[in-house]
Length: 268
Image 1 (cartoon, helix red, strand yellow):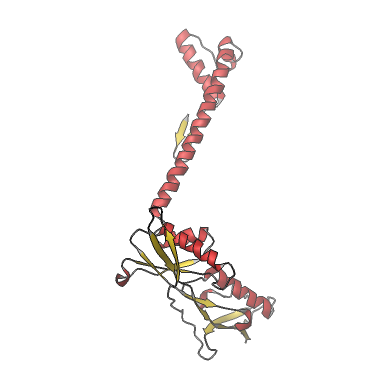
Image 2: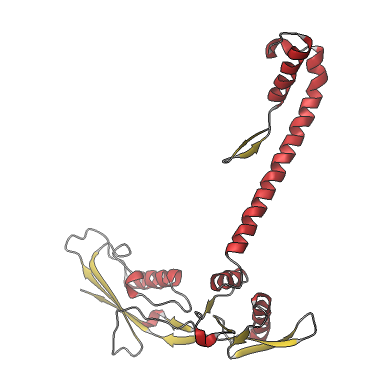
């Protein structure tokens, strides 16, 4: 069985195993077999079944090594990204179907944990959802850390103690968007209709923006989305009076909400 860093252990073929046996026979008995003359001899017939068995064992050994290597890779990844870190928590909750954000640590928050979960507290099954979320928080919260937030469930631990596990709901901020496109004098492309432009803008935002992230207007619609345009300007506003283009620096629990009817298109 050979080994390389790229492929790991590679099982020998039956021919390779029989060739090794033939070489030892030549040394032991003073014969001069080549593989072609070795085939069909009594030695060949006798050792062929053994060679198959050896190859089977080598295949199983290489599979065990691969499984062990995968286990080590998984373990190392888990160690490098434990669930109690902010990124680990985000991934753990995402695996359970929840989008969350975590408040960045600050000296004043020592011993406290702030999580915000993007869920609808008006949904009919919210009580069940809240309990499921708090159980996740229980599973991934370090002992001694006090969770914070408006939503709370009291859960009994395996040692009989009861603790409140809490999280926050998003501070949903309804905003208006104004997208201005300036037609390129060199344009030879078909101009999308307004409905398609709005749908593309919403899709782009959904792909990059989420709870707790800064809202960055320049990222969500570019000339790659509108090849007919020479220039594109996306602005946002909470009142349709003051229009802004600078990124909105969000707190961990802030979330912009956007609807198609709140998008205005301007073509120049």
